[in-house]
Image (cartoon, rainbow, N blue to C red; front, side, top):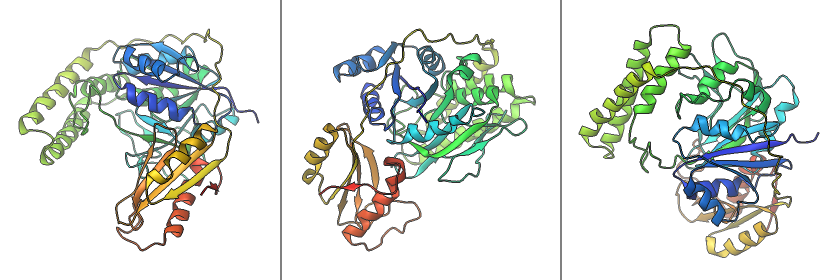
Length: 409
């Protein structure tokens, strides 16, 4: 079956370096019918131009801190299927192949995958539902095959903002994302308006960096909670039929608990806790009066599809005890259109991390005897070759769409 024409929409503001890395990784997708649409501020667009991307992708200038409005702009230039990534995320090479496969079923309107945390191995988000009080709860699905789920009662299927895809016509008819939600609960609102059959695709995986922004510091402490309070209030007015006050008090308590955790860790001063909670409270008041309006349909795209050339070469697996011994080889293979994974194992028990490199290859680092999966023991004796084989098998299905790869010396 021919792969559907798919547009990957990336919204970016204030993170030009992360944006370039995200686009570089997206261009490594092993998907034959792909275009990239970037909606970004001037520094982001300038960084893409300097990196040589301007003529290969669609770009739309936008410098307002509203991810919903930016995504809607991306929809105006999108193809048959539209997928979304955050600018501080990078997709695995087979991400789009897995994510779009369920759309072969004409009753599937949306799809979402699993999101990996900052270490590149553990999961940050897996399958969840979306509820009218703004909460979400885990769903049980098979971890190797897609599961198509129907909404249950008032609950929808949650799509992850940095790893989701929709039929463009369906999303456009709904008016896209509601700009009243500037970054928080925007996907949850869409899920509840959509209430459609949704595929959860565990092998469609994205690494999420949680990069700093105007909302959080590099250590992930919040700068301001205004929009969280405002979006929660607007969301409850729109979807929740009960008294909003208990939900407000519970969320405020959760935010306070999160702030105290940062304070105990030394990332916040005691006075910061009350200051930030005050921004949550003023946001709540703002959201209680923020206008809720109907959303007009998104018009059809006027620009032709702009296919991006992606790699067609094999997947190469490199391993060594020091990066400098194989980095030149990895870069050369990338230039030949290959996908490359490099595993560097030191003679220690350091935990493992996975990062996508700006040169275009995947790098896993850690100790030969250290843990990669959470279920691993802190220390386990390994022979070098056996450990490398184990780690290659662990990533094969998400990086090569098979159980094996081509090993290079």
